[in-house]
Length: 89
Image (tube, rainbow, N blue to C red; front, side, top):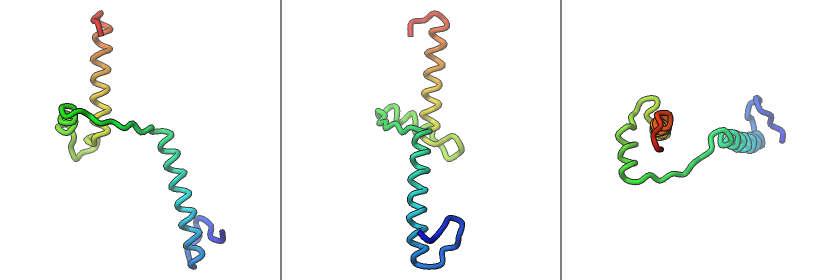
């Protein structure tokens, strides 16, 4: 490899080297990201999907992942509250 990161891409050989470096870098970043944020495949039922969609909006925190996170947190807080109050689950 003749091209080095931070150097300009001047020749066809440099471009091939740059593309190989770029691909390897993207794969490494993806492995790092997936190590921190595990993916969970989830297919909600129709009623839950409707609940998610009614809370999804075009602002920060309104994407589907954030909505699902908040719904899980709300359910967990509700369940913990019942346990603390002596309820049955």
